[in-house]
Structures are given as structure tokens and as C-alpha cells.
Amino acid sequence: MRAQVEFVSADFPPYPGEDQGPTPGRFGQRLAEFLAQELPAHGFPVLSVTVHMWGFKVALENPDYPLWLGCGNYEGHENGFLCFLEPATPFVRKWFRKLPNAPTIERLAIAVETILQSSGKVSNLRWWSENELLRPPD
Picture 1 (spheres, rainbow, N blue to C red):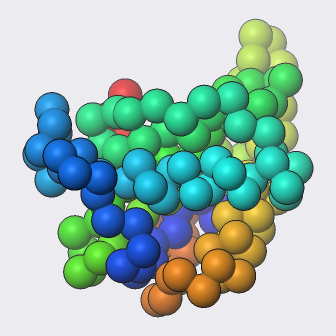
Picture 2 (tube, rainbow, N blue to C red):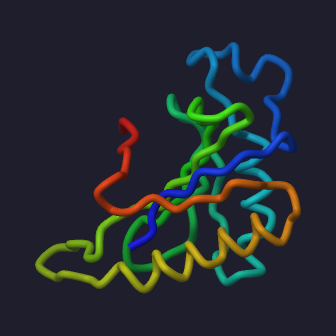
């Protein structure tokens, strides 16, 4: 299951002072706003874009469970970014039910990849396998 993608882009620099806030060096607001603008056309209505210690969270409309996309800069590369899809598990537990999540995450992964690649703004796009995933703090 694809749940994290890294890429390189010079088109999403920090806003003035963005990387100097509560978490120096962290930014990704331009990327989050770009994806939030494009995702509804791919069937993922956006509820909000909020700042977090690790970057920006794009909350998506999903009636069954919380679904969101995290965006932030990634020091692994110059002008590097990392996006992660949550929940990054094949199933989600809700009350006494086990809901399949893999099809939703794959549809979201396809949407994110399509948006990024068709924008002409990114290079070196690479999806991480499940055993390579990093987890952001809550």
C-alpha cells in the first residue's frame, strides 16, 4: 500500500517567516494549499488545511473515518518534500467494525501522484513501501 511520497520541487518555497515559527526549518504551506485546491477535482473534497509541528495537514471529507494528507519539507533532498496519507493502514477500526482502507488510500495516492506529475512542478517522485514509512508525531 502506497502511503508516503517524496519528491523535489523549487515551486513550493516557504512563505516569509513560515520556517521561523514554532518549528524552525519546517514548512509546506504552499504545497498543502496547492494540493487542497486540486484534490476536489479528483473526488476528495477538502475540509481544512491546518499547521502542525511536522508541517501541514489537509483534512479530507470522508464519512467513515478521518482521512487526511500531511505535507512538509523533507531534508533528504535539496528542495525536498514528503507527503503522507493517513490512516496508512489497510484497515481502520471503528467501534466494533473493521473497515477496509486500502482502496481509499490507493485512490488518494493516484490523485496525489496525478496532481503532482501533471503540474510539471516536481521531479524525483518516489513512493515509499510500507516497511519504510515514517510516522509523524500527533
